[in-house]
Image (cartoon, rainbow, N blue to C red; front, side, top):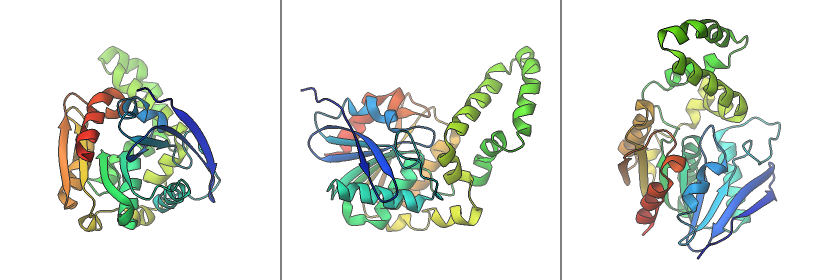
Length: 268
């Protein structure tokens, strides 16, 4: 039976939160990735609303949620999520999260273990997988001020077209636009003091995570995304790693029916 999608807003102590809601049954809460908002999960929850009560918020500073002029941190997002769930009287939930949302979800589960039934994480940030600083170096160059790297890309674009590098340059320029539109994500991932970011990483705490964890990554995803899943799988004691084929960087929108199937199987 079809359930209509409901859109809601609620005022919390840190700002207003917007979310989509649909279905009935066990509570699933979806957290979007770094360069996305809650719409990232809409195609996935279409396949789940007959079995679950799905809540899909925009994190504070993203999408249609409020953008208060404050210092953003993972801990702030965790406490905002806790207040949101408390206000809606959601005492025990499954958290399904991608990228930056995965960092928030894991941090929440570590801080409030009695409120979590399980985690489904896709390329979750929050660990020192590989060389984390190097992984975000290109992004920081793309939005640096003055925008020297951006000027360089524009300058070499005509040459790149002749040498077959047109798609790569265009991809970097498109990524720059997404970065500029995601100011809070940039701040959380690489725009704060390095010591503050490192203090919020979850590597050392993941062995204490008691909730079951399902880690999903696309078979055609980047090595960096795969290394994030592998790091979580190695550190969390009750973790399972699954590869989705085909699939790359945005599984909830690329293969929503497959992601939904893994979620259904995990929650049984």
